[in-house]
Amino acid sequence: MGNFHLIVIAVGTTIIFLSFFFAFAVRGNHTIPAYLNLFYYYPLLILFESVNSILCIYFHLYSGFTENSIEKLLFLFDFIFWALFFLAVFKSKNPVFKKVIYSNFIIFLLIMLVSSFTFRSPYESLGFSNMGKSIFCLLYVYDLFTSEPNINLKKDPVFWIVCGLFFYAASTIPIYLSLSYLYQHYQAVVGFLFPITNITIIIMHLLFIKGFLCIKQQRIPS
Amino acid sequence: MYQTTANTIMIFVIVCCVLVLVLVLFIAFIIYKYQQRQNHYFQNMEELKIIYDHAILESRIEMQEQTFQNISREIHDNIGQKLALAQMQLNTITYNTVEKTSDQISSVTAIISKIFDDLRDISRSLSSEIISQNGLIAAIEFELLQINKTANYDFQFNVNGDTSFLKDETELVLLRVIQEALHNVIKHAEASKINITLDYSKEVLKLLVSDNGKGFDCNGINLVGTGIKNIKKRIKLLKGNCVLESNYLTGTQFTILIPISL
Image (cartoon, rainbow over all chains, first blue to last red):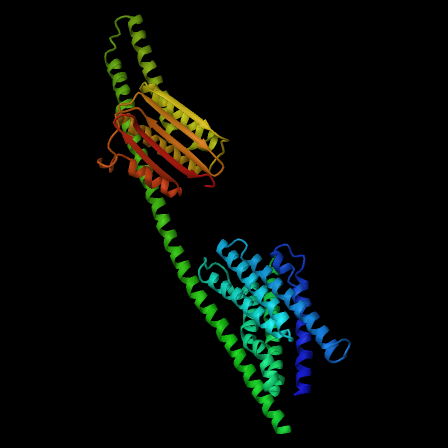
């Protein structure tokens, strides 16, 4: 399983790198909104998280405590990124959405901060952050079915991005929140669950790539 | 050991497949439901467009019908009378003396010349050319001038705000609405004063037509046939709003609001 995990990490890092490349390629395109223009920061953030884990686990450059602290900080930036992303997506929509995003952001930010100090592992914090992100995604789906249906979903980059995020965030909530407990009682299961979270991250980034390909396809006719 | 790893990988693959399947189903479900909603929405839009086009066509036919009525009335009441007078004078020419005959012919010539003027005025009043060439304000001024030739009213025409040209079609509909409102005042109100105000603001054009006539009970009167129904229908087509206020003391006031973007 160890080698398999390594393969998953290698494939995952490549996909994240590709996702960064595609997001970076549309940077400076004035025909798309700023939140897509600046989206490349997100894969970059995930790459940092990945590099942080590799440097600590495989190269033992610094202690687990330092790694955890850096992870917690990166997870915080991750959550802030998504809050800003959804705020930008709902910019011209019903002001109630903004209020929901702000309150959701504040509540989960507080929970993340509290859990950062309470738990040693950063994954509880990530679990709560994913809970907040899932609510953002549900808000997007709600808006999709209540506003005027005038977008082509199959060619809408935001739709694919939100699908990817929702899939990753919703499916990993139970894993991250129960990780400490499982580690104490069923250590073998943790080794099995971790690659699953990596697979969800890979699928999420594949969907991001799909979203950015939609932008590229839209640019061809012009 | 090897068997355990193989089993773990098998379970791992199954779990991943299930997750991917759930994702695919989720995306397919959302796209399917959204497209269903989209189809319904476009169908509704299409139906609304057909209704709107039908209403526009109806309004155009109604405006055309009214134009024909105006032409008919003008020919019968004005041109016809003058031509009859000219014919009568031509029939009474005696050719006794050159002076008298000359006077009679001059009089007929003057009548025919007046008929030409009237015909030109009618033609201008009915044509939409004045709108496209000079705009709504000039067209209203011309209309008031025409009415003052035949009847004596104290007209007040005010324009407030920064004037802007609307679409020709919108201005034409507004002109016809004003003509209809003025026609109503002349026919029913027994007024001496007529006030027309155009109030241009950034988003809305407010048109006010008021008189000091005898007024009527807005709730009691049957509005069919008075042209008010037509006015309301036309304003609705311009996505505007109109309010009719009338009482026996202060006369009638028509307030019309039109979005300026039209």
